[in-house]
Image (cartoon, rainbow, N blue to C red; front, side, top):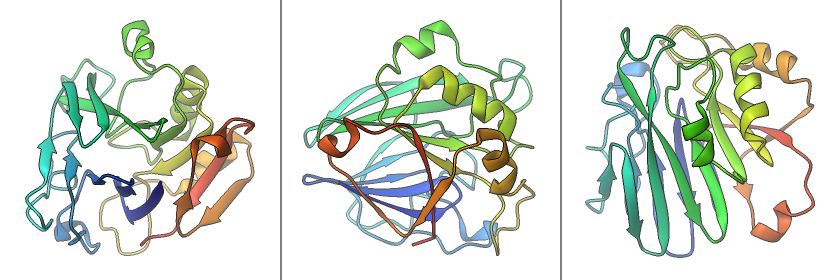
Length: 212
């Protein structure tokens, strides 16, 4: 499996059977949108910085809400959550996606705004290998709340997302705030090449990705 990052909350996950894109964004955020082929696209919520499926090629299968999905030997579970700490009263709903491929579980939290996950949500997120978590605050959880969520999920690998980077015109905190909170030395990489066996003996680590 290979994971790369387009910026914001948009990742490209390449498995032996499919290409998955998460939360593709509009050019209006200041970054270059993904224009690659995709088989599956997950959209955590219907905001322009997460729902731009129009630039993707190959007429991908779009998943934009809770439910269970099976496609190309990939299992995807969409879990209802909230975009804010007030049961969605400010910013509405958000879908957490649990993607399982090649015996690896990836959790993409979308624009999660909850202070913590509920027991019901956690039951569905057991044994997460790779956690993609927003850390930029303002519209989602910040570094401190992200640390608390990570302690709930206990993943092997944490990849921060949805934070301030060059050219992004959305006001967010930088990733530095989160890194200070988490207290784990990060690895900075262009892409993550991973197999299940690589995760078996791992202690939790934080990976900061460069833009594709």
